[in-house]
Image 1: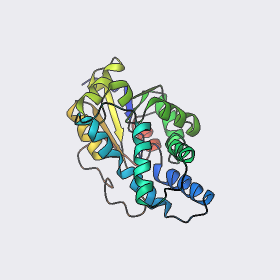
Image 2: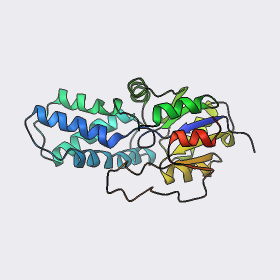
Image 3: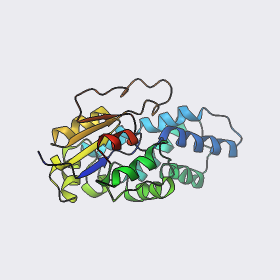
Image 4: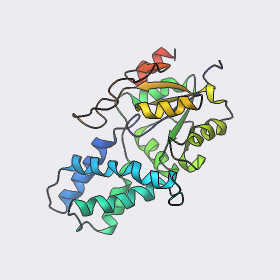
Length: 235
């Protein structure tokens, strides 16, 4: 089997703490309008629209659009559901950029820098280029290259998303390892011949998380953090 040359990372939840960051920006926006909300509940509802929106594209029911556009459409839908129609268009546009400002888990920046000593680091995210680049600048994430749906033309877990990302690096799939906190992402990557690393993020969905608390297969690596993964990979 070919040695691992590149690590491809899921980003939302695996690298960054989207729920806490998005809830914080929702709370700040609500305070601007003098209203009280359950910001975490709204953040969860917004995130819950993520997969259904991408599925419309995966199923060829709408043309490809970048995640920024899907997030913005989903935001309107969620604000209407929570009776927050008073939030202006400009403020909705600003709130949508919350996804560009997500911060990493405590180990993310340090762990990525350690892993980068031995491996090519790429995002394999459904996020669009501007979103991922802005996030990287704000959260000190040391990517070598930004890959994902906007580059491959497919949203995960479509098989082409993984195949084309590896091909973009000029590497066979078996020389690339998918790093994710989500078992379903790893199952899809393994189906395409990629290596796999599960990094547990038990707080991604808050204190009541019930999914992805443990590895659900014999992944090549199982780690508690990126620093732990770097140690296992002898970085």
